[in-house]
Image 1 (cartoon, helix red, strand yellow):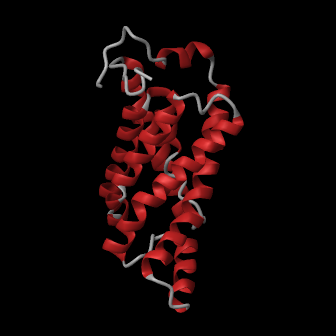
Image 2 (cartoon, one colour):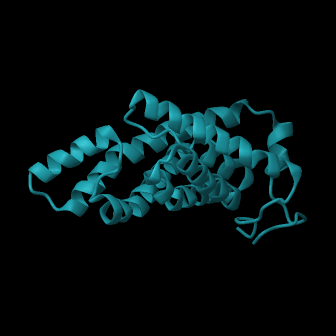
Image 3 (cartoon, helix red, strand yellow):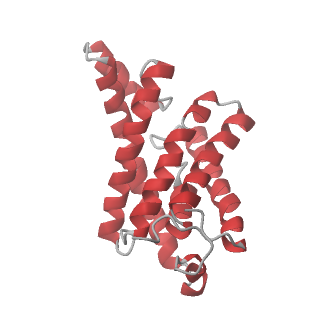
Length: 200
């Protein structure tokens, strides 16, 4: 428990951050171009959280949104830097607690990450976009809820759930498979211990 937020300040993590941001960037671009019902923009965030811990995961998530938003002019993405920050932190904490050791636990991590995204994003949806998310599939459901005279907050909540929870399940499956494919010699570089310099 005392190593939960420990973060190595070494070359491995310095290289990990831009690599994970790049993975996020490509995933979001891919999903956006193909109009997929998923975001696919947090694979790198979650990978950073699993390998480097919650602080690295949070940095990867927030930085990705800021870079993607500023380079593409996508103002929606900028707003959700906060969501990505908390996703990275949550996955990093779950990984440090042992919830990426097998597939079943990884799916629990996925649900936690999805719910964190829903809780953080829903108020942002309502405040900035009138309840929509910018995802064509989720917003179609939001339109149905509004046509049925459901409250905006509830419609936005459902919009987030049907996009974010499945997205995080797919994301964590990918991350779990990546982790299983990485050699122990590489993953051991990121293991927290009592002797490392930390940011906690």
